Image 1 (cartoon, rainbow, N blue to C red):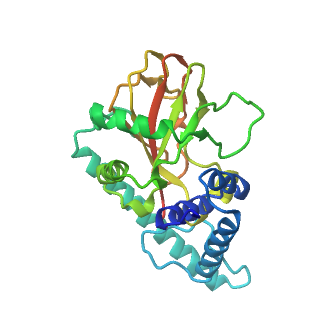
Image 2: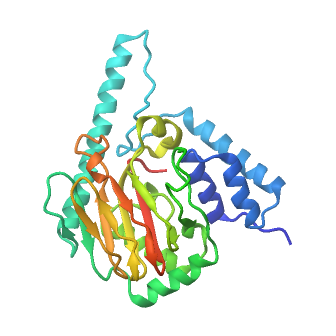
Image 3: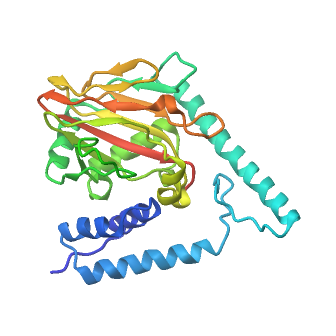
Length: 299
């Protein structure tokens, strides 16, 4: 019996097309999960047509910021009106992110005392039982991790990834909701939750989670720039595997269940280079984490 392309898979495809992911890579993933090639092409057409239709209308969501807002170069009044609207939308995004900061300040999360980077930790965000259940789940559905832009360094990112958000699993759904509730951000502003798995020697060299300008054009889509990242360690690593924020001189040794939360943007919504971080090579054992990225705009 042919596999059904249900709502969770439709949302996964829509989100990854919005991110600007390569069609061939998405097709390969879908084929590996047992979908028929004709059904895959049909679903690509459905999502693409919907996206084209949506592009004909300016979104009315007051929280949505459109950095690529179309401006008529031949009409000064239109340019002025569009600039005012864009500025107002940017203010709405900034206000929403301030509300996230206020919400985190009232939570049990511990904030790094730094003006250079907004960063928090929260111990025991997940229980040991939850962590082990997620490890068991993601271990069977791994694929090579991807990069927002290509590099000649084949060792830049060597982990494997599991698209947990597309799996129909009650535990993952509860964890996903708990992460969104932690930041008080609706799930529509987030990418699907992912799991990463590192074996001995595997790493993710120094990088930022926000998109550079040339990457934003390709991966931003309607959702725009990345804002907050929530990463949760699923196990205590025997040796290695630390997460180091290089420009602020702080690092974290993986502790099962601990969440690390940071804002990748400056107050003016430009990328904060102080969020540069690196997943050090695992020296003994393995490392498993959950990662969820939030965006400026809702899908």
